[in-house]
Every structure is written in structure tokens, then in C-alpha cells.
Image 1 (cartoon, rainbow, N blue to C red):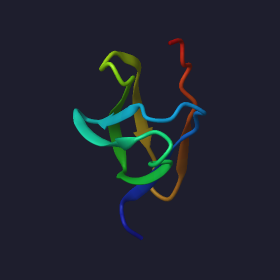
Image 2 (image 1 turned 30 degrees about the vertical axis):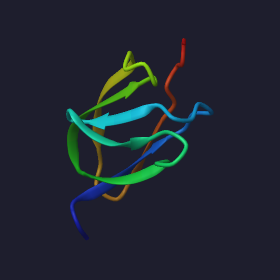
Image 3 (image 1 turned 30 degrees about the horizontal axis):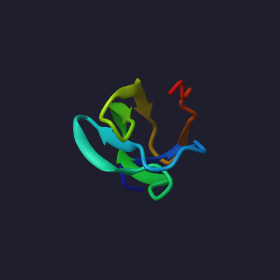
Length: 74
């Protein structure tokens, strides 16, 4: 088994930018679930104006899906 898990971002907001470890990964609404190497990562969500409204340090576990439910305040 490869050393990866999955991250699932559950939000009703579409068009926010998703960043993983500082790199652009996609947009909410299009990128719902994606594979990520097991270990520690930083997830950030930015609204269309570029404001970071969610940030979390996550621990991805091999073979598991980590569900993220950001608290959207904007």
C-alpha cells in the first residue's frame, strides 16, 4: 500500500482557493477529495479576494480519509 491518505473538504462554499503546504491545490466545489502523502501538512483556504479564512495543521494517516469542515465566517 502506498504511503498516502485522502483529504476531503466539506463545505457549501464554492470558488475558494485550497492551498496545501503553501502550494495551490485547487478550488472548493471542484476539488472535493484528494490524495496526500501521509504525515503533517498545512491546509489553508482563501476566499476569492485572497483573504485566508481557514488554516489547520493536519496529520494525514495512510489509507484513511481526513474530513475537514471549515468554519466559514465571511
